[in-house]
Length: 165
Image (tube, rainbow, N blue to C red; front, side, top):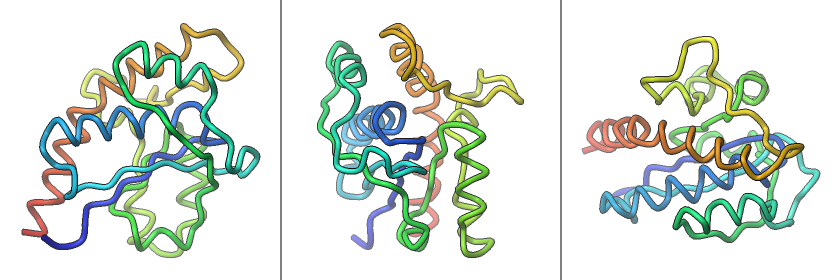
């Protein structure tokens, strides 16, 4: 087997949305028998929380719905672009910032919005809202949005893996 297909999910501080997406997608990758072929992690556009665990509400939501947790926040480094196949932004601000940091067109093309993989998401409303300043229900809403986009993301990953074969 060649190099794994690598994905990073990116939000602002890497303590709410992106670690949740990481753990949800990681579980689905395992369920599909793709662990080893696909590596999943997360990062943030900002380094405010570097080394800190995920927000306790992120962990509580993941545990409530049967997912694993465990996290240390880190900022996204533009030098990582060559190592990733997909850089998944959680909202339009992250999308624009990541594309701005990308060193070339090939890197910019790797940046995608998570909700573009949800066939029921409305065009023009693809942001996963930041739940940080709200209650636990906001975290559960974020989880539902991530889960809705997961089948489409898995299909994209399979296309990427097939293209390598």
